[in-house]
Length: 327
Image 1: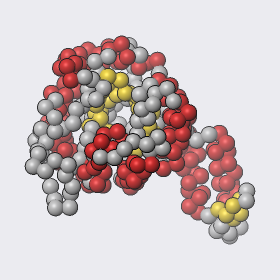
Image 2: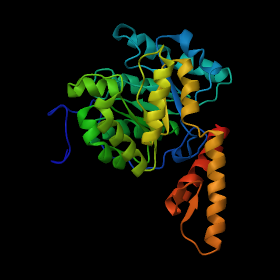
Image 3: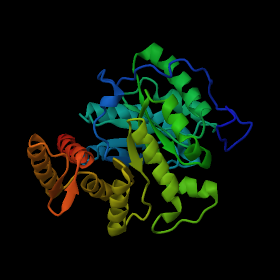
């Protein structure tokens, strides 16, 4: 660890090797596609690994991707049995025709469960891992080395969603994203653990995590990967969830983690441009194109000044709508 990298736990080491091999290899899905071509991840639905009844319901929903949760969602007493049944439930889902991206959230690398969790995923028909509490590059190096060794044997390459939810993780997020840029599918922000780690108090408006929440999405954008916003824990408050999702979208997040089926619908709506937004963007692009052909670099459009950066944003929104519609 360099002098400039922050640590939550000085003196601790990761539970797996810190060998760097493979950190910059191209990462591929089961289909052989580069991870960077992963479909848009607006909604990521979590379900506990010890609840096969909930996992079997995955095909009913319209999430962009799904997570079998071996970490917080599975009680300590059930973790071993959940690991043992992982292959069976994955095979059952895939045999039933479930083809959506499927991830497994393992326990944090500095826990006794991490090595066994990783071993349980090897050779499974999954698309990647959610790695929680990433704090330092040593965490990523350890998981990378273990994955690289397994992938050399199986030929099955996995992507990673990096969950940033500690003080050190927020401060080191750029280093983590830079080191693991060929492995990461997305960065995600875990607000609950972050607030606990920093000693803060949770607020209904999430103002206490605005800095950390913003730093994660900035890093994801800078490194060209997707970003997943915080879990909204008040599961019966659909109005509050919609407002939280909308604010995450305003910050620049591309998607959100979900813990109930209803949240999937609200998330997909929040992170998909509305028809009105798309139509206005198309009008703006047409107007600017006509003005540019006439030699003008900025125009007035529907009461506001428009120049090149706004046009690029409109073009991105139209393209995003097309990608969301294809998801």
